[in-house]
Image (spheres, rainbow, N blue to C red):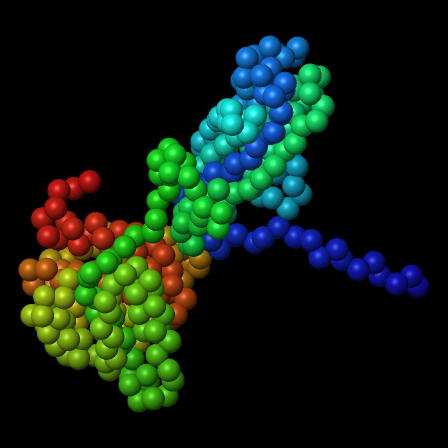
Length: 333
């Protein structure tokens, strides 16, 4: 018998368990046309017509057809594409930008790169009759934002004009805020296992600029209720708990919070469950809860697994700065 033909190993990234998120990317590149080519481009005297206008149309088409060009690229329904051709006289160049945006489970940078490349190739095609010595250079991703990783900017950086035009959005910040991170677990208190969820929660909050005070408590109502009363008395604006939201007899975090709460905040808990269901249908079994304690302490109870904590911060983290501002009387955005 013939030996079996080995599988290629090629496959698209599996994004079935990811949740949709707002995403944006901007790619950039330059066509260097030389004095003669640049004069014809900028003066719109090329034999085939206005290359700059046609390049913008080609860039739109290129971005929309990225999945046709790259076999493992996910087909995406783009919600926004913008192509700009900016003359750079001092280099006899045309600098091309392609911005793409959508809400999806995967990033949109390949679409931006495809759009910029299509626009540059169109400029090349329309300019070559008057200047064959053309060069396409420095095609790269300028920045991308959204999704779990937030903002990424190319190490080469961005000019002030680029920052002013595109206004890249950094992730949510809690600079100067004091946050209590509380883990509820009888077994972690007894030393049966390490508190990984609390450590992950602390790292996520510190990455947002918060000053984190970490606590480890036993399950049950009174340990957490007492801790929340203490945090409210200290004026701690935000308390994030992990654990105690399941169906076990000692999973009583929602009840502990309710015993000291002054106002319920149901929307954040429902958002967590709804968004988490994109990862697993078991999210609907979570008893995660949120409330205000005292005059100015927001408490959020998340499940106890590290994965749930990571997802919880991904989902709720962007809302926390505005939630604290609202709690302090700031106007609604």
